[in-house]
Amino acid sequence: MMRMATETIQYGRVIWTNIERVTPQDVQDLRENYPHFHPLDLEDLLSRIERPKLDEYDDYLFVVMHFPLWDPVQRISRAAEVDMFVGSGYLITVHDGTLKPVRHLFEQCQTSEELRDQYMGRGASKLFYTVIDRLVDYIFPILYKVDANIRAIEEDIFTEDSRHIIQDLSFIRRDIIALRRIIRPQLVIVENLEKVDRPFIREELDVYFGDILDHLIKAYEIIEDDLEVIRGLSDTANTLVSYRLNEVMRILTVISVIMLPLTLLSGIYGMNVELPLAEWDAAFVLIIAMMFTIAATMLSYFRRRGWL
Image (cartoon, rainbow, N blue to C red):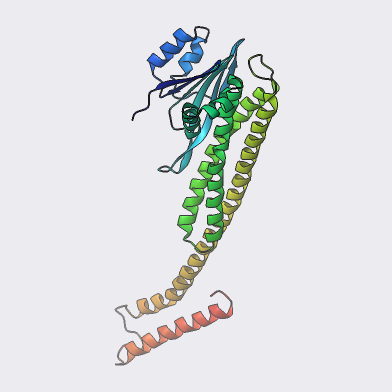
C-alpha cells in the first residue's frame, strides 16, 4: 500500500502533520492552512540543498536539520534533511521518507493511543523534542559501524594487501569527514533550543534539549576521535608501503648491480675482434663459470654487509 504524501494526526489540542516527498501542492496547502508562515520558509521546503538553520518568529519556529544516512553504494554518509514547523498546538515535519525514526514514530502514534498520549499529550513542543531525540539516537549506530570498520583495519593493517587497506582507509576517512560536516551545524541549533526561552516551548524541556545536546557533543567527540585514529592508521599504512617499496627497490638494485659486470663481460666477448680464449673450445663454459663466480662473489659480499 502506498503511503500518502501528507498525513495528519490529531490528539487533544495537538496536530502533527507529516509530509513525505513534498510537492508544490503540499506547500500551497500549508500556505492556506497556516497563513502566518513566512513565504521564504515555505519556499525552503522545495529546495533540494538547504543549510541547517533555525528561523524564529513570534509564534512559531522553522527548523532545518540534517542527519546522516548511509549510502552503501558510494560507502559514505549523506545528509538527509528534515524541516520542522513548531508552534502552539502543532508540529509539521517535512522530509523525503528516508529518515526512519520520523516515519516510525509517526506510525506508532497512528496505531497506538497510549503512544499518542505519551508523545502528544504534553503539547507540540514535547513532540518536537521527541522527534529530534529519535533522530539524534539514530546517529549512533552509524558511528558504531565506523568504529567497527576502524577496528577491522587495525587488525588487518599488517597482514592484508596494502592497496586494499589504503582504499578502505580512504573510504572511512571520507565518511568521517562527511559525518563531521553533517553533525557540527546541529550543535548550534540544539544549543539554541536549550538556552533560548520561547512562549510556545515548554520551559521544562530545557533540560531535555540539554540532554540531546550532550548526545550530539558525544557523537561529535566520537567522530573527532575516529578522525585522529584514522590519521594515525593512514600514517602507519603509508610507512608500511614505503618500507615495502624500499625493500623492492633494494632487491632490484642488487639485481641491477650484479647484472652490470655480467653484461660487461658478455658484451666484451660478443665483439667481433680477436679476444683471449676465442679459439678455445671450452671458452663458452669458462665464461659462464666466470659469470657465476662473479655473481656469487657479489651476493656473498652483499650478505656480509647486511644488504640482503
